[in-house]
Length: 213
Ligand code: 5GP
Figure (spheres, rainbow, N blue to C red):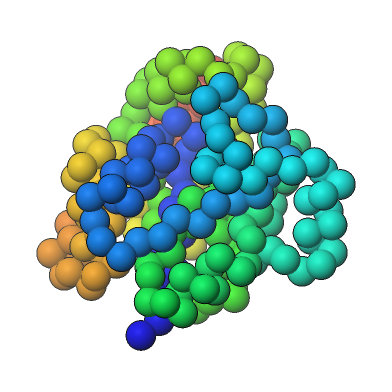
């Protein structure tokens, strides 16, 4: 049987990377797609583990050779999903996770009807900003840019099948695994909190509008 394609997006600082790591380490049958990017390596990041770091020219080569399942520009850099790995893992029955931003997610949704789109949000604006600051890898200007991007992302949230408030990494990962395996309890929990989630997202949006000029 073919595996499922799972797209995980979320505001920068919402903790989606940690959730995905937890999912890979504690649940079975997942494969994580490693993206190509033209952005600079952050301290501690490794080639082929976090990303395939390539030049802008090389990235444009990959686009013209149709090597990418989807790609987008985010904060002035290219990010994209190499096709070959995803195809191989799906054919081997693995559930493949793409941790990508929304423009890429929408491209995947168009191409793969069955893809499961999950959006992760932090529980509040404060927790989002705290996480971006404690990561310590971005300048204030870059953090502000990421928050502005979050404003745009909030506009297309209706395209996502599920939205999860990340209050606890283990719980968020368990909910995602439940959704992927058609567990009705997980699906009910996530679906029934959608109105609360939208309230949280609106309050994050309002704070970003107030603080980021
Ligand atoms: P970061 O610079 O923080 O690693 O990633 C910035 C954004 O790019 C995040 O929202 C991340 O999910 C997204 N991203 C990472 N890889 C890809 C990809 O292959 N395609 C797309 N469209 N977005 C990606």
